[in-house]
Length: 273
Image (cartoon, rainbow, N blue to C red; front, side, top):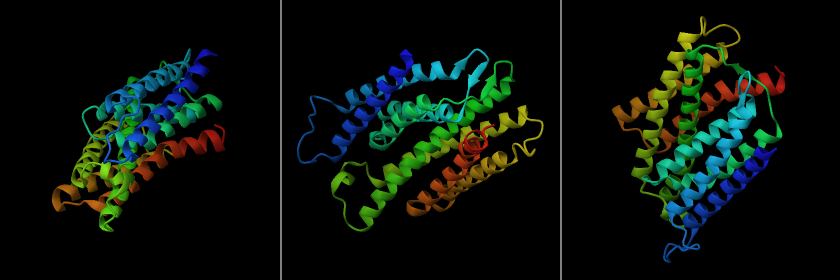
């Protein structure tokens, strides 16, 4: 039962970290920020404490004698954990902490759902290494594209404010628009690399990726790959940016989420398989 308290404690710290980052983002920029001496680095360290506690909770829920329990809410919590970890580590050297205002409280919710609604979808220990690599690459890809989607939403708000000549409020605390766009495409590039490896390892493990049970997941994942690859090509060839980049990013993310979490929701929650 200890891990249950650990999970709720992690959720509370995630929310606290998001709040503190929000205070930094929304405070009056004409005055120095001094929330009990909490610098950006110290706030990130608090967030990493939540990540550690979240990892303990995941370990207790994911690791079972038969293998890995990748039920819907466990999988969602694992993706959220990896997103939070990647974000906080990257925020030490990149101006990404603004994403934490939205992502970290959502990660806290994912921890709570994991504990309140335990599922059962076991990946057996004896299953092939290719399958395990496929799942690892998939989770990394979903996490990176999830960060990119949140970043794209923030970029959309920033772009809208600047187009309407309303650069006030928290927009002043964000990095320049070009920096935000460069960070977005870096995330997409890494995510596409992971998604490519996911599709390759999936093809090595599965005899027929287009059989009825897997066809929708394969087709949607490949569609998402095409969307993101086209976006990167358009950026390189035509300099795509702004609203076009945001729309392509969000479209690709929605398709990718339908491929994995959408199919798991239908199979495990609605159909109870």
